[in-house]
Length: 182
Image (cartoon, rainbow, N blue to C red; front, top):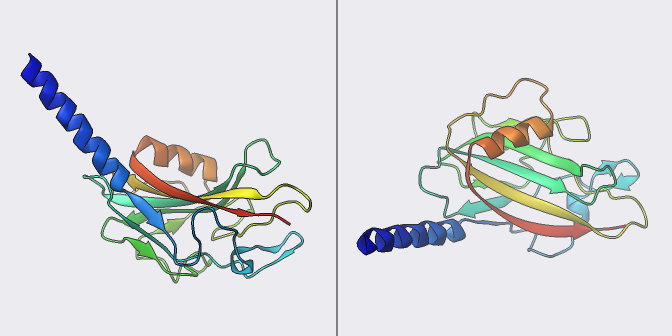
């Protein structure tokens, strides 16, 4: 019996170690840093470049068949936060997205990837634009490793529905947080 417990403990320790190896990074944004004008929305009183940063990930959990990427502001004064970018059906062989991949024309995304509607009401990256005078908001960039090759998402689905499907199929995730205030 103790041999089984030891094997189980070793298996759990190995899976925990593998999960901690999953990481997300950006050449433009360091964790805990302030977003630049390039990642700020252009509208709603903000005048930034509205360009998604380059993102790269490594160390995905075993069994990953696709990825999804989200950018979320939990500090938005909506009662439910604000979804700035939702990308899904990123093939498992892909481990990065170039700067500007979040344009609405899908040009920077790998074949098969899809973008969901953000809380700005459109697909594609929508940069930071918190209310004037509010504390700096947190922008959480997360890559999710999924156990399915494709999420079957209906056209025009909300970010919340896509988030539900991501969470129902998630093997692991990696994220970092950046800030922006005005």
